[in-house]
Image (tube, rainbow, N blue to C red; front, top):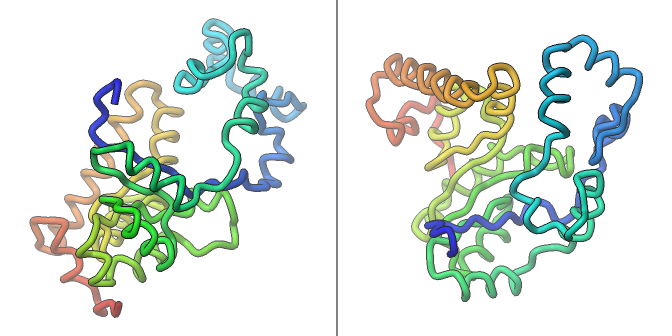
Length: 238
């Protein structure tokens, strides 16, 4: 409210931190653990190393204001484990709904039970997501969850249905719209773009996706993304 944010998105897809063996093996943690491999990678990117030394250890600007006085970034892991714990249940989200008078969106919806709870709470929209598959790698893909949920007339009439996860190209955007997503979110592609090109990487990533999506729309002779479902080879069944 203080910053006049028009829409509040509540994440419900991280009730606990996932056990990620790949990250444990590579030493990816908060704070980062230095290993021979990490040091060799840093030496292989001297320009990156110099800039990092110039600007200092990267920090989470969004979290810093809420960390205890005197707590530095080396203690971020401790802060996150203390702060981001406990599942988000209907009672907690209902309390947020009562306090927040603007549009409310729940991110991390994956099942019929989730959708029914979102409707019961009075959410205005949902983002179908498995948090990029980073929490439980045996879980259902977001696109498969979307196919089942977005084509249920009861859900579509109650709230906006969006997708997060797995979008890597304009074709993926087209597929998501074709099976019922009204808006699509991406994370990793922008990280790749910014990592490769710096400040210009975000805009470059958007332009790549726009160009690819428009090209696909021209190939399919459609003018609006809402027309993608009409181009499915086999109609979806609710």
